[in-house]
Image 1: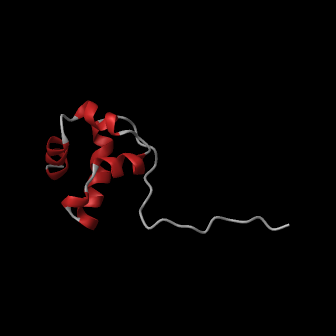
Image 2: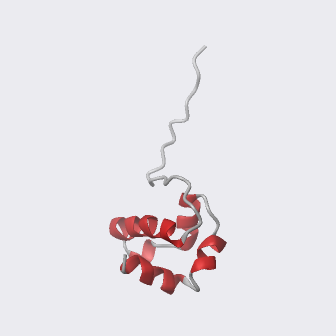
Length: 74
């Protein structure tokens, strides 16, 4: 019997589960920034792609602007 496979491939890249450290968020955000622009760097989308919650990001950064500053200076 043949096994069925799920051929629904997402166009977005999936990142391996990253640690909670703030440095884990920066590469993922930088990739989105380069590929899609700064307006597409959204905390909820990054959290989902990294397998984390938005709260983990806000534990390290007071707001999105502070986070984007880290990304832009990386």
